[in-house]
Structures are given as structure tokens and as C-alpha cells.
Image 1: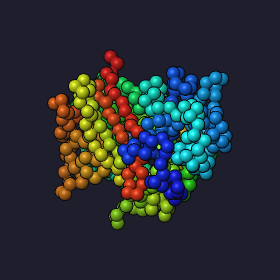
Image 2 (image 1 turned 30 degrees about the vertical axis):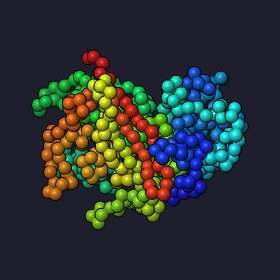
Image 3 (image 1 turned 90 degrees about the vertical axis):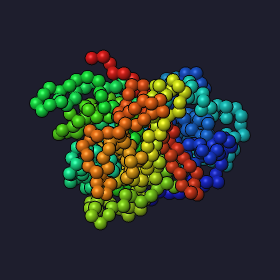
Image 4 (image 1 turned 135 degrees about the horizontal axis):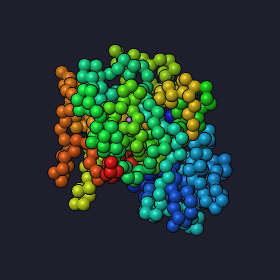
Length: 468
Ligand code: MN
């Protein structure tokens, strides 16, 4: 499972698509994530698989039509006259890892000019490259086709923060350092970046013991900054995926916002865990950054200190210890409706890193299947809120506006009700999200000696609850 660094990661590799060579771009030739877009006004009708490169998109369906992509690497699906890009992407996900690596190498050859057939043919270029602006203006991103969605709780810092609010003396439950905690989410309400999110309605805990629960629009609406892993090849029911093979079963990663209704959650979560507080919407970014593209940014798994238990052997391997982690910088930004009206830029709320997660993606995949549960291509695994050791690295408002600090010496453990609001440049204050707020999540990888790659953005605006 060792991540392979090869010629496709060479920082000197450039594309003839000039904008891909700009240092700040999310999409240099070293990245090449997959996305699916629907459009009626551009080159094509229906859904195509598009690979962002600089300020352009490379159209894999058109490349294939033009016989520049072998059928063994990419198979476009059609329904009559309409192209079905979502199914074509699933076909990529289902191909063995060596085929996915070959597809990446083929795209690099075409975009670097090592194979000049696209670069030197203006008609082909016009057909296979679409400007980012046109796609964003006229196209709609299509969500990855996940049949199932599981959300984990893999950040020790997040679990400790949240645990401290509810159980100040005993923040971490005894199972935490032995199993990656997770719950089964809902695939039907996964939406793609840019989709509005309606404030949910539901039950809230009674204000006094033995009283009746409240009912109405959520009062404590929150986001959770997470990364999602998209499953490639699955496993048969009854079989499991070993820690050594786990990463071959992952197509890649995207940004995930696990919107959370904290007041609904507090009342409903005992004893079976999250339900309606989570399943009203989960937003994903449109680009799947492949595990191959992430290879240069791998790091060791979370370093367990002497008092931490070692993982059981089925979740432990040398490879996982040495390179199971990924150094992905994650940022959360906010803009209120008033800020947008006044032309103000969004403000940054937090910045953390995926390398701080206690459990690795491979451990989550292995643990998920150890009992014989079958993962399927396209399934989404959420990492859990990514929080770090400092206040500025907290990945949810629940933690960010909380006054406690379980890592301070001596620890400051105060009940979860004490909160300092975040001040917005308009003078508005936020402890939780208000209607009209837009949450913008970004993620990228940087490392000396390699090209920076990015995940694009994951956005969503909160709209008012339906009337009850
Ligand atoms: Mn979550």
C-alpha cells in the first residue's frame, strides 16, 4: 500500500495549458482530479467526466470519442443520446488500481505534450478543452453516486473537545482509542457544493427535567469540516479488506461538510447516536482528488504516546504507521448575507490539518469491513470533524465558540454553555449559523519539492426553515 511517487509528481512537469503552471492553482498537471458536470449549452448534452487543469476542463468523454483514450482506461456510458458521466466515473472507480494509475499517466502524457496529438490539433483542443468559466456558468456539478455514507469520529482533538462539554470529568469514552467510532449516515441527502441548505426543523430537549420537548426550527445550526473518501473497488459481503490493501480500495478524497443541528442532536443521540441532526444535508466538493495525486503529501499515522494503546493487529501495519496519514490543510471561511450585500470578503474561521487525525483512512476502511460488511464503489466515508490541538484549528462552531480548553494546563473544563461569539466585520455576532450564512471550505496540500495541489471548494448557504 506504500504510496508511489513517480514521474507524474515531478515538480518540473509542466502543461501546455499555461494556466496549469501558475503556482497558486489548485489544478496543476500533478493533480488531475475527477468531476462530473451536466450541461445543455456547451460542447455536449448530458453528463461528462471533466478533469480540471488550470482554468480549463479536460473532457474525458470527448477524448474517448476522439480515440485519444483507450477503452481499457475509460468507458463512457450513454442512455440513448445522453451521456451518463456519473456511471462513467463509477467505471473508473471500479477499475483495478493499475488501470487507474495508467489513466493518470495517459492524461499526464496528453497534457504535458509528451504525446502531442491533443496539443497540436486545434480542432481537437476546441472539442476536448472547455474553459472553467463556461463550465461554472453553464454547468451543474453532479454529485458522486454514493449508495451508502458512513461518518467517522476520527479526530482525538474533536472527540476530546466535544466530550469535555458533555462529560467534563471523563471526556473520552473507553472505546475511543481502540475502535474508529462511526455511524451510518444517509446517502440520499448528500448534495454537491453550491446547493442551498434549508435549516432543519425538529425536536429539542425539554428545558426542565420531565418537561415536554420543544419543536421548531433548529436554533444551534453548525458545520463540520471533514474530508470524505470515495470507495473504488468494494469487497464481497462476508469478506474484509486488509490494512495492507485498504488504500487500493479508495478512489480519492473530497471536502465534506457534515451540517449538524446541535440542539436536535443533543436530545436524540442517546442511545443510538446521530439521526435527524445530521441527515438533512451533507455537502461534498465536486472534485475527487485521487490517492495517486496525494502520494507526495503522505505522513506517518498519529503518533501514539506511551499511554496510548496500540491498535489491534488487524488495524496495524508498518506501512500504515509510516505513511497512513495525509497532510491536507483544511480551512473554513464564512460570509453572512450582510457581508455579501456590502461587498465584504468572507472571513477565515479556522485552519487545521488532516494529519492530526487519530485514525487513518486505511484503518477506517479495514475496520468498516472486518465484520464482513461490504463497501461498494462510490460509497462515501466521512473522516469526522478535523480539529487540531489549538483553538484556531477547531473544525466546528460547537468547538470554536466554546470557552473551554481541555488541553490547557491545568485543563479548563467548563460546561458547553459558556461561549464567546465570533465577531463579523459587519458587527454581527455568531455562536452558531444564521440564515443567509455561507460556509466555504477549502483544502490543499503543500510540501517543499512538490507542486501544490488543491481540492477546490465546498460551499453552502443556509436558507430559512419551512414554516411550522
Ligand atoms: Mn461528522
